Image (cartoon, rainbow, N blue to C red; front, side, top):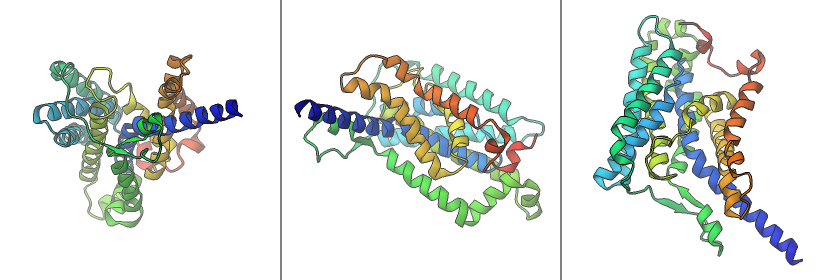
Length: 311
């Protein structure tokens, strides 16, 4: 009986650790996927969100360090992300500019600027974003630790619900989707398609910047050049997997977050073998999703029509 209880306790601790880790690791995925969802709904792709994520993480950490306030850091991160995304939107509005090529250039620019400007921020410590303690009901220190939730996560959940409602039930949502599905129809009604796409890309950059703040000011909670680990690029696959639906982006982010948290969760309950192998699970999952969605029937389901138009 004791062995069965020990096994049950171990399984419960592992489940809670994976759940808490999914929220911690999944928060940047959620923010960046929502950012890409808004951008792609307008008919534009932003592969530069990896650079936006890294640059905003550095800027947010610097803002929090210099001001002494994590919320100043969050605001700086969001504004930095919006600024880089605005640059992408303006460049892509020029004639004969390819979204993919411009996005790759933005990714390199954002990463390069972050590495150059952030060299002096590698050693200092900045004030961290506060946590929500959801594990006070338990006497287990492991459960209490696992259920320390980033306050940006409920903000991301609220954003996902707001976007899902806005896309379906508001005028701005209709106009945004019209620009993504038929630019000719949007122009015929007097709307500036480039203006809509620049605005959507900029708003998306601000939300992605919140993901960068989550990285440097919460988990792992420091600034270094390998902070992102490709999460901005993985988010593009995540949006395809979620079929351009904000609420599905939430569940997909938790799935990717749980995959990324699996290794640390196993280690927290004393299982250390295969730690580095489990850390590769998010990248394997990304590859599986890309293969699974590569057929025309699956890949085009729910996609904004203008994403398939060569510009």
